[in-house]
Length: 262
Picture (cartoon, rainbow, N blue to C red):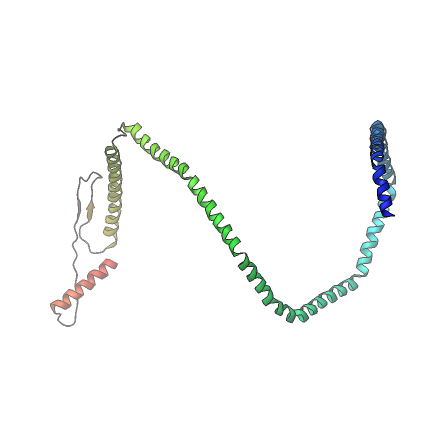
């Protein structure tokens, strides 16, 4: 029977396809022709619904309030039951977890074994991903080499241009250029050293008692000037017994050490 039906459909198929196509085209043409009417009907339906809701709003609002009030009242009245049910649920969950602890403990080794197996089987993939990450980082670094070199070159050229433009130094003579830099650096170091040594001299003069005279430090960055110091200090060593020369030397050394710490 099925074979006969199938054979009949196959025979009728060439004639059915044009009929179906004509039917579809007729439906599409009808929809296109009546599209304005359908749009008007849709707008009318939406407008009617909106107007109905607006008209019914005064009656809907009290109903909504009644519904909310009943829900809240019912929840308040049944609050003890809800809390009791919640406690029972928590107790049941805790009891179930406690009873299932042995099974969970038994499953832990299997879980760890599965994780280890998965990592072991995917070791090659993980290694490949790591290699790709490292290779990508390295390619990014090497790709920035030219950019970095240009930035450094521009920085150095800017410094050189700043000095050569101001002083008229020939940039083709690096020795002259950097000799100029060295002279400036030496002068700066000398000025800083002289200023700091003056502070040290003032601190010595004001902090060590019994010093006759003072430190005097003067000079300039070019090396002209002098650095001198004069100190007169009397050290008295008192002992109930006579001291040997080595003992006197030791006591003198200790006295100078205490003076230095002071």
